[in-house]
Length: 332
Image (cartoon, rainbow, N blue to C red):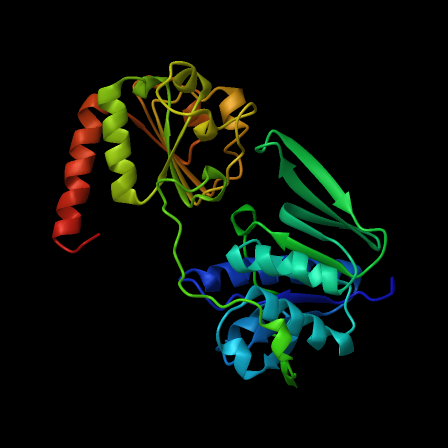
């Protein structure tokens, strides 16, 4: 099966940012397929909208729509079994998921059905000749691990925050193939009762979309209370540096850097952070970095996209009041 070069991606159908996630997933899938010399296909479950124009822009040649009434409601067990069944007649090298709640649940189950393994939460996927290698972070982001398969098929999930999306050059004609399947009753072992979204304040900062980083310049209870209030207004998570943790203000699981966690949020707001190499190493995959520091020579300004020289004791109360004003006026 080594000669099989095609890539199939699982399209997310839930969540307000699914289009953004699918765009990044398809970008990675298209890049891998192109380097292998294969084609990119996509798979969607049930009657979800297929967004054909988007798929064509990202180089998808075939969309497989797996059909069964049991697929109208999500179940990890049922979806994994259905995907495995649909893949029985599809030639592929790699089946790719986004590392979302669904992707991280389905991928290991699918790998079991395919008698292979799943590598999850990848921050990079590289192709050299006919070989694919997967990079992931371990031990809270302190180390990188490179993994490769000895033989196909391969199953992987990627962390969307670690990748950019890029449309393919030129539009690709899309072929739609309906794949009706029968799902035996014994496969349905559980039912979803309720979807509970993660609390942005307590979610692991590895998966936070917005992080407010509190550095040594925030290392007092009054400023940290303001940082927490700002984080609530921005629906973000609080991260920090070793000095703040060592002083007992924030727990170690909030620490970012070489001895903490490596994060990749959409926005990192660095407050009172000097910008030491140890900390900056943990935020390099961030999409946008904004920094505030009293010292105009602070190293964090060399890393940030936008920087402000200001006293946090003055800035934070005003910024919080302005955000509240915008919110009350329906502008935020």
